[in-house]
Amino acid sequence: MASSNHSEDDDFVRRASEYWERLNENLTHVPKFHSIHQAGVTEEQLKQFESKLNITLPKEIRAVIKVHDGRKHIGFGLGYRLPSTDLLPLSEWKPYEKENEDFVKELCDCLSEEDNACVDKHLYEDFEEHTKIYKRDGGKSSTAEELFDSVPCELLIIGQGMDDYAEQYLFSIRSGRIYLRVRENPVSEVLDWVKLDCDFKDVMKS
Image 1 (cartoon, helix red, strand yellow):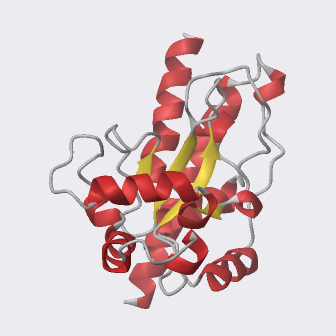
Image 2 (cartoon, helix red, strand yellow):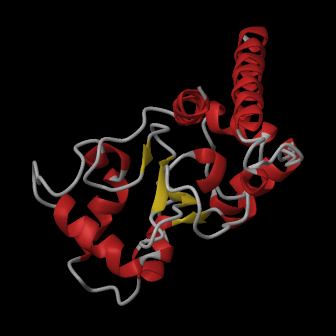
């Protein structure tokens, strides 16, 4: 079993390496967005991050940032909502539940209703524990920090868009889905997001 898991991890890293290489090849004509020299994170950095938040990141996203650790937000330029420009470094990833207090409470209000059309259906599962706590609390807690202190992060802010709204990318630790807006269908996993970027840039290049 250990050998099988190791082989799966290697495959994720191989695929991530191939996708990032394609991205950098396609970005040579726009040096501002070219990130060929961006290093990945180490296993020790990943373990420290996971320990700090009491979480375990899915294998796919571990593989992606072991190859390429995102980049600092660089303002406007390519509004394609893709990882070559919008994925932030691991050091800037934060728990959505405690960084966007007003928005989180609005989201919990929506998720407290069944089949609410204002949110993607997958969020009922991906934000389940925080929604349960919010409903039990009934408004007694004064801050999100106080309200959600007892449960690990379920949604991480891992990216920031390059448009006027500075949209955030939310990553589900449970399912690996990526949300740009809570009303839109999420990307199924982070490697799909990177491949989508490759495919899009291939078309732009041709």
